[in-house]
Amino acid sequence: MDLTRTGGPPLPRPPHAPSEAPETRALDSAGLAAAPPVTADPASWGWRGRLRRATFGVIKPKPSHAETRHRLAEVAVRQYIGGARLIMVANPKGGSRKTTTALMLGHVFATLRGGSTVVWDNNEARGTLAERAEITTPATTVTHLLAAFERLIGPAGSAGDMSHYLRTQPSRAEILAADADAGRRGQIGSAETGRIGLLLSRYYRLTVMDTGTNPRSGAWQWAAHQADVLVVPITCDPDVVQLAAWMLDTLSAIGRADLAAAAVTVISPSATAPDPRVRSRVLEYFSARTAVVVEVPFDPQLAGGAPVVFDRTSQASRRAWVAAAAAVADRLAARERTRPDQMPTSPGTGPLQQESAQQPVATQAGTEPRGAEASVTELPARRAKAQ
Image 1 (cartoon, rainbow, N blue to C red):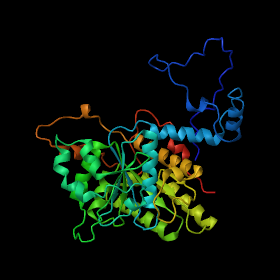
Image 2 (cartoon, one colour):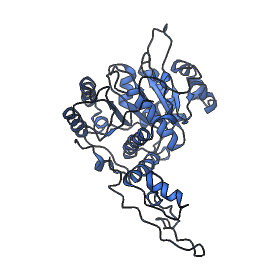
Image 3 (cartoon, rainbow, N blue to C red):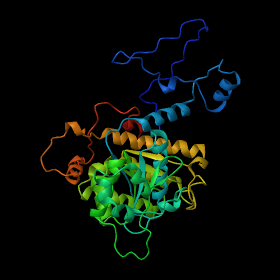
Image 4 (tube, helix red, strand yellow):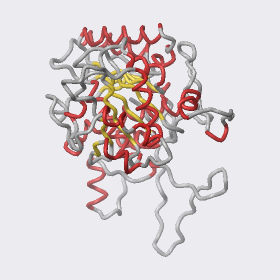
């Protein structure tokens, strides 16, 4: 992952005596003072950061290449994405690290973007997202939220009322749990999923969806047609890879070839180290079929199915997940969305019809609308290379 291909090297600040006037800041296109780039700040990591702190800032080494990449990744996560967006995390194979991926992306987005991020367990039957969360209260699930749909969608609905159905994490990410009632015989279908999606898009700017394992279910099909970006979590295990490839074929068959081609693949470590030739083939295949491939390292905090405490994850793990979130943010920013003031109005259009009209139209395979401004990290230059 090279996040610096489109950015120049950090520019050192010229030294000056305290009595001198402060250096003039660059002006943006509007003639206003622009903030210096994050790459211009002195190093904080490693020996460079220790040297700066030991000399009380007298010596200011430049950041290393790795620190520069991480700073640019954080900028990418915070970039403007426009509107309420839906991230679909999907792989039909259980054990593909789907729930872990959805949870970690939610933590990163909420931490760096300042909240307004919800992670939704859209398993049509019984999901495990709530069990992986650090905060497990309140005990409400999607079924309780559906029972309050009319009130929450109406003018009397409020964010305070919505909080009864979500579990706020220390990272400020919100968790919406799947139905946990063993005696319930019905399942969440496409209609119910649509109502939940409409509610979440009203109260949150970013929704990360942890899907079920049945691509033929109504909940999964709704997500596939409405998602703005797809995240494909895999390991290098053959069965996980094969089902992920089949899912990409399925998306193309139902008219979402654009979603598959613009997907972000996140490779988590397998239980045993894969054969280097297998890993090379996996990287080559998903680099060709999806927009970008990101590998994340092993982290004991994420292994074993125990609740995830985000603050206890390793630095290497968090930095890798920031890179993954940056790739997702780039994909979101690349998809054009129409502002409400630019939408044509028609009499008698209700909220459900308006939400449907705002969804992006599927494009041909391998194509994707671009925003007016390129992303700060330019994903096409960051395709993973097989080693």
